[in-house]
Amino acid sequence: MSLGRPFGGRRPVAEIDWKRLDREYDIPRIVTRLDGADNVWNIVRRLDAPGGQEKPPVLEIELAVPPRAQPENQAGAKERGAFLAEPVLAIGEQAVRFPVRLMEGQRLVCRDQATWRVLGADGAEVAAGQVASTFPTLVPGANRITLASQAQPAADFRVIVKTVKVYR
Image (cartoon, rainbow, N blue to C red; front, side):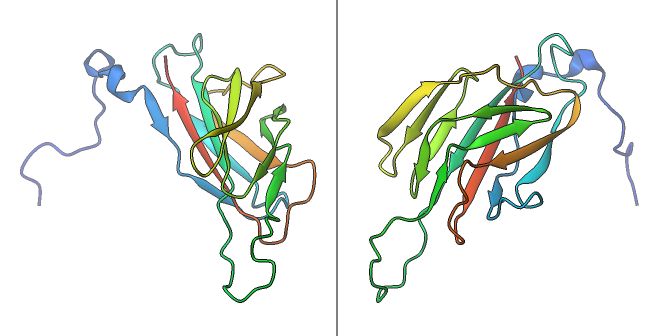
C-alpha cells in the first residue's frame, strides 16, 4: 500500500549535488587464483557523472596481500612465502605494471595514476615509484579488469583489490 508518490523517478540534473557523489567505491575483490576467471571482473563507470566524456574519473587502486594463517605447530611458520611478483593490472586492453614484489602484509597504493607506494604491515613505506606507462582510462559503462603477476604465486595466496573512481 502506498501513501505517496512511488520511487523510480530520477531527480533533474540541476538538483543533483555532484560534490557528494565524487567518490565511488567498488566492492573489494578477493583474488585467490590467476586462472582467467577469479582474477577477471568488471567495474562500471557512470554514464551521467560530472565532466561527462571530457573528464574521465581518476581510478585509485590498492592491492593488499594479507598475512596467511599459520598453524602454531607448523615448522618454519616464520617463512614468508606468499607474494605477488610485479603485479599487472589491465583495464580493457591497456595494462599497468608495478615493478615491485608484494610480500605478505604489504599493500600497494596508487591514488593519482602517476605514483605508487608499497606500505608494510606497520604502515611504513617500503618502496615507491612512478607509473611507467599511461594509466588506462575508464570508458563509460562496464570496464574489464584483470590482475596478473610475473610469477605464479603460492597455492594459498590471496590478494585484495580495492578500486575507487574519483570524479572531478
